Image (tube, one colour):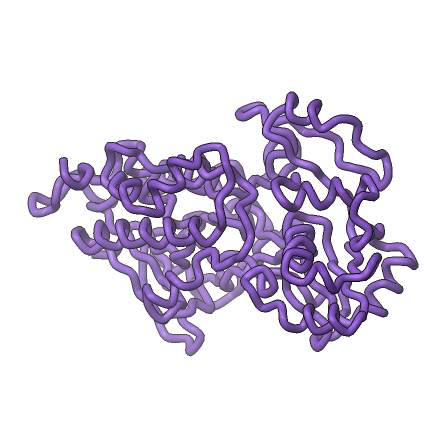
Length: 421
């Protein structure tokens, strides 16, 4: 049987597709149609070790990471495991990202068990270089050697994003991606700090200030006044509510802070762009001149260019670029994918956009394909990927699948109820 969909990538975002089908009461139908994942990691152990391996706390409350799980559904058992229980118990508080990684790994195990019990599969160790739309409307993924990996009726691209370091012109021997630093590779920065040499952080996002906070936490005693420079554009501070924003008191007018954007669903201020937790505390301390080891510098100025040129190490926290495989027609002609500031553009149904609109049968999910909301904020969060984004894709896939196979569950398939019920 040709599966309904192949998902390129088995990272955090794609776990939301079975979760959404479960919540929507469509998991049996989804299983009957066939689902497969293609993942470049060599196996589940390698993937588990790389799920959120960061030393910092989450920018979101713990509840956001478990919001997509139906406690009474097929995957509800993940909430009974230690990592899931901890997230539930923490509720509105933030948690170390490594705890989130452990929960996501447990969730991947639950989903793997469901796939293997039905017609699904995961193919590890396959890096998809190209996705070909065949003459009959199906899709074939091709590996880096050009050999076919899998054929399906539709495709979800969930290949993530990489830090877009090349566009800033900083030599590679002085450049450290923020993800590498936040995962614990601090030696190059620590050496510069101990030698009294300047360190620049390119980007005033959560990653940028979290990187600065990590350096101060690990090596703060050796950091001199003004030794760390954060080169930023607009800085956004995030708050759980307007009341929390008001309680923070008057905010400095320099440098310019992003105006508060209130999320109509949650009431959060600058929900997707704002600094929170330790990153926000550090930023506010710098703005209040209570922290002199870190200084702020607007991007695009002579001062910023000099700071980047003088720095012994530049930590890159200045944006990502979607890492999708090439999409081609049956004759090999490339189908250009539209990009917006490095990410691959998708429409309101998470369909990948080409030069003339949505590319039929191709969806995008996750950080490399994050949609913008009505206020222009890019909706990049696990609860969004596992929530509305995944639901829209599932709804679209099942609508596409209806004429292909009957919406019934094979007699031999286990019931999709929570384990233990």
